[in-house]
Length: 340
Ligand SMILES: Nc1ncnc2c1ncn2[C@@H]1O[C@H](COP(=O)(O)OP(=O)(O)OP(=O)(O)O)[C@@H](O)[C@H]1O
Image (tube, rainbow, N blue to C red; front, side):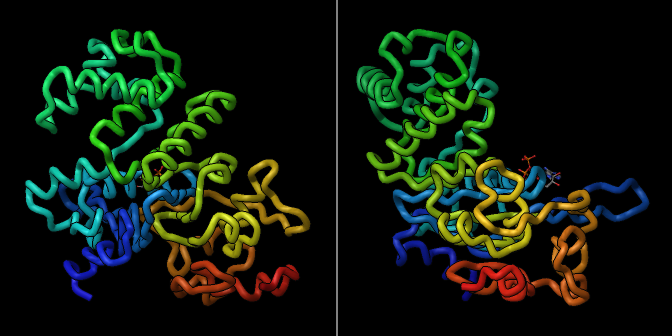
């Protein structure tokens, strides 16, 4: 399939986003005498999200989650691969199409304070988006901003206040309000609750779930916290060193993880280790993406790795109702008495 044909496939499936074999390589300067090194931040990641559904992307720091978020929100182009938003090709879009695409997908960050102008009142911050992107008059913009504040659980008087006058949870509500002002279809939430107290986390997650139900939003939810992901995800994509190692329904991933890395992540999360499942403890450091292992990228830390794993990269295969990139998945399941 050529790039343009592949990028419009979301139109037929009804998916809000369809990403196919996304890759992002950074060129890292090595001084005057050596050519730049190639850092594979994201390699060959594919997924789609339907309206009203949440795909969570999980993995350790440095595995490429934020790079993926920047590609999906059109901040950075992929080095290769295709991306369609609402059935429109987002990689080859012209300026007018890009404007439409940018409204279709919005980003919520971990630390909203950094992105809220401290000198602007909340009402101004929300209205500015409408002023730039719509033809609404001043009164309509004001009504829309007030309505959005109410929708995210803030009070009308908050309209006149400045960002520093809010708590962390309230600021995240403002960031969500701002993300929704232009009626996006996809919200990319990059660690949206990691900076909040646990009790506040639950409130913000409930708000996101309510808004998703009301508005039919698709979420790409990026988190290293599997406890949070278990509450919000429909599907989970596990990344390691830029690669998808496992991708499936929340139930498949949490109840019967098949990749040793997913198993290790779950084992490391209190309360999620799972009944009689064998604990797999991660050994060693995350390798440098500038010098990734040959073969399976997880092979240097995997207790099950064979010579083949160290030499050959495992392709994604369907096993027990999910995609998993592991030559040994079946053997591990058999050895641990956990066969499908
Ligand atoms: N602009 C850039 N230039 C060069 N390398 C980059 C750039 N952005 C990210 N990287 C590298 O790409 C890899 C993936 O980074 P990324 O920030 O996407 O990971 P992450 O999973 O989001 O981590 P974290 O949770 O710490 O943000 C890392 O090795 C990082 O150093």
